[in-house]
Length: 320
Image (cartoon, rainbow, N blue to C red):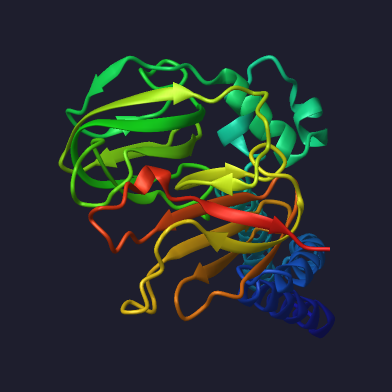
């Protein structure tokens, strides 16, 4: 091989080698792809010239092989990274938003195009419209919410008819709305509520410890907003109007337990933010700004066994 052919073979190998080194590195492999294409062209030229000159084709062959491997690795790696990003984006969307499959699947009459235009409040109203009351349910294990299950997606008043204990669960679509309450059959002496408002999306699960029987009463799509809420999950724009409120309660805030009282979690699906607020003996001056579509999760630490927890309300007084 003449010196010119030899130099061309070396260039082919160098470009192919550099391309191979960066072929698996995101963004950098775009440059590697260009190196691979150039090396492939030079490699083919080197092979043709070497064959005509009846010289050795070793350098040209090595450079061509390196270029082909580089191109293949770049294409494979970019396809892998693209799918990974797509899946990550999809998972993030499905696990953080009320407007994901948790509500869309509950309403089979709406197109995807229409769903994208709807606000969180509209979607939650639609979810409520799809709820179906149950009869008395004997609790034999974890309850899974689904269109073909005994409990379908909807908004419910969960009433405990037997036992007392923890009510927990896992969300399939909206991680920021936690299910964690204490409840007991009406008339029990442990100070727990017998009724809790709860929002259930498709695929959610409920686990009731030491509770033997419940009933779920579907809450209508059309409700009258008030200024008092019990324990559970409440929708701004449905259960209470949007506005700025000062919080108070008709329940006991025992000074002996300065950190016990009401806990309010405010979830905004528009931003994905969640904010916790406490109303207790050490924090009585509490003001909240509520916006349509936000979900308020409320729970009360009842420090008196003689007080009926179902009658204890969180009171919202409008502030100008």
